Image (cartoon, rainbow, N blue to C red):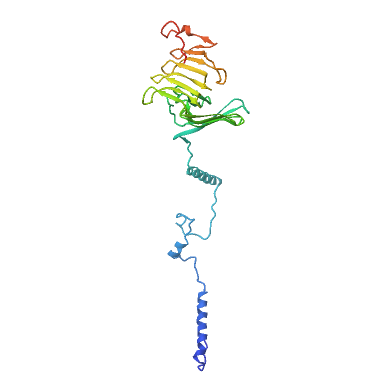
Length: 333
């Protein structure tokens, strides 16, 4: 209790003391501690402000305990959890799709030759879903998985065994790139380059779906759908694959030019089912003296049976399925 002040003290002396007492009582009240019970329920507003974002609704179905319990997992459970996490990560990532010119493709490779600097490695792509190449393509390329080799053909391919090349192509020898290019549905497409082992450019050609960019293409019809002849030109000189068709769309002749000269094998067809009739051989290189008179090296009958092969056998006299008793004169382009 406050001691009663003498009555004789003037009021102006009491005012400072009263103000000091009021301030002292207010500060004591502000510093007083509020008693909190852990058994009391928090108010709704306060609980919403301090909600734990690391917990789930399942964790809050029971009253939280202040005594944290450490979860102990067995090795099997821990492994299962890790496997589940890895699976979720793999499923979350989208698998990259290889697509070239709007078609899905698959990567492949093949090796040939002895190991070492002379080994040849070819890296390529092929159509994931088989599609027959254009019937008018001069030459088509395909990969045979069983034989692990790239082949070239001028007839229809076998959907069960042949993989149509489609996409980038790279050929290496001894780790050095010697040829690059692109395939489009079995035909050479866009730019093709060849290099020597010193990375010096030897040749550069441009193709459009198998035809050299500067090729001279003629047709039987005004609508330009029935191809008659494809004469390949590069820089004004005959270079590349040549082909001529009959009006029914069947092949008549095909072969290759190099440096303006016929080289390699030239084939004459029967005119149905693209069956070969005669196969002639010219020089191996267009930079050697030109071979004006080719050599007949193979002959087939109408059934596609080989009846003659140079320096091996000659069964042409035994053939009876052709009209007439004498072998027709050979035709050359």
